[in-house]
Length: 636
Ligand code: 7RM
Image (cartoon, rainbow, N blue to C red; front, side):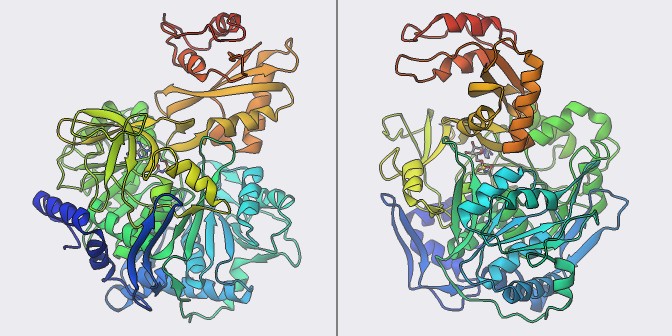
């Protein structure tokens, strides 16, 4: 068994070994980490409950593996170069030793606030080094972090705090994003009106804008850390103790708290990072994701730190001060490995080459893509203009629930093919099934993507509701983990992900449940009922198309639109704002009251040539009216 795969034969050998004897394979991988106590049993699992345990009986702390383990040989190596939103502001860099010290200090702060093992802590912060410190300090004291993307609204934040029963929130006064300053602490204050369980809020001073500090509840990070000791002995936790909760959208209205546990997540985050990206001692790795998403957890914080790599941490956005920002940062830090989302590539592509050609980009070696299917045009643009046709593109398919990359080329090893995620990582056993759950064997097949054997970082439960986890992922097909994605395996055995087959829309790489958006729209005072579907969008991949029935049919449509947009922003956040809002008098419902989304999807796509059987509709007349008012040109 090798740690880092070097060529295709080695990949094939490792893959075969991982299927032949998964326990021996993963035990070998786990051995290079620091354990306080070795495991008793490598794997125990069933997908029916589900109940999956990796490295059971072991004790460890993931932060010792991210930090302490590197101090001897890499203490002075840079862990993060931090690039602020405004490039004129002083940049910062932090070594492994300095990060260790900061994490120890903040762990002591958490201890002084009475934080105990297993407690949930909510983190709502901008992309600054302190968000990494906060995440790692939670893990170091054995608390469970729940990071909430700082673009979510107060109401979304409050829901997540309440679901996780978090009693501590870590945040900042404000944040800088592009030319905007966002009042982060005000959002937290508003959220806490509906989250009475929160006892303390720790506030990092980032923007120095005025905030209200509630006496007895709110504390300044900067003051607490000054008095904290830099010595902290990491708390040993069990292999299967939860490391974090991360909320994600599904087909039902309420986001689920995906739970990942410690040891298996650690082993897979490091293994996948090492093998997919193929960094070396001198690499400068940059993932443009936000810590609020799984990519930020696995491939900004844990993977790179476990591997002892130097990364760039970026506070800003791709288009500020102009659409050349990514490339400016690449040249500035001599980035070798660059990982971003197709939506960002398409957005920058639309801005024109004049923002790319002024930059050298000659440090780049590997390019990555994640979050949604990458279309061929974007793949080629990325390859030609960013990678200059000399950088392999790793199109990495995975999910919040999978914890790490499952299907992807290994950089420089697997031959790539535009828009294909290519082959499974060792330890990953994908199957494609038809709608009855029959496995479609062989090549040139298309169906639903499932995984038939556990990998170390598989979702363990959905927080506070195990049945929901079983129902969502393990009940559609017996003894299989169902991904929710459609997939094709081509003549080379390569996997191409086709997108979601459930009621989830992927907007700019962000998952949105249609029911979740509908619930938010229905809160609007001008609306009685709504139905939301996805439609192809040039930049975002998918856009949100909302059909709404108004309280007052005479109300001016623009007024309705503005009102709905404001309500969705208030309830979920700006990322859930519909791109198109069509006011309708009725929705196409069956006699049993079910909305026929298929019809709405067709209208939103602009193709009504074949609407299928509409005779079961309660009132087939609504279809004509909807077609007439469509906000896209219709063909057919
Ligand atoms: C990492 C992440 C997961 C969903 C997943 C897919 C889609 C992600 C790719 C992709 C095609 C890819 N987690 N997806 N990566 N589709 N090719 N390389 O995005 O939980 O937020 O979303 O994203 O539909 O099910 S996520």
